[in-house]
Image (cartoon, rainbow, N blue to C red; front, side, top):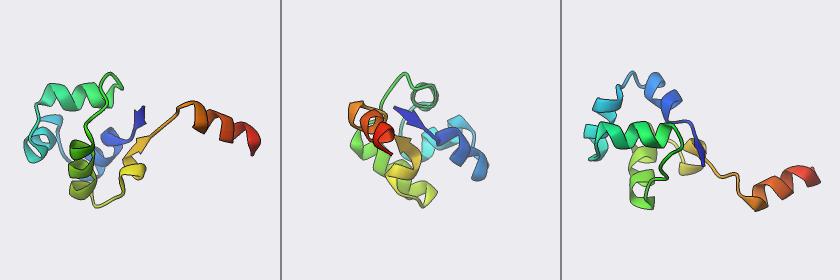
Amino acid sequence: MKNNIKVYRAIHDLTQETLAEKVGVTRQTINAIEKGKYDPSLELAFKLARLFGVRIEDIFLYEGREAKNSERED
């Protein structure tokens, strides 16, 4: 799953460490999410969205089979 966490971190001038502390995870977790190596729990996704003041869909971009098929139809 692609995400815009790094973008929102930059907008809010947060380091990975600071963001991790604010949402209760490790810096390594934030790093893994940013690199697409780890998909966060729904609870963590909500925490991130609330912190940044956006919708989950603004941060996380699902590119599963349905998304790829709908792109072809457009």
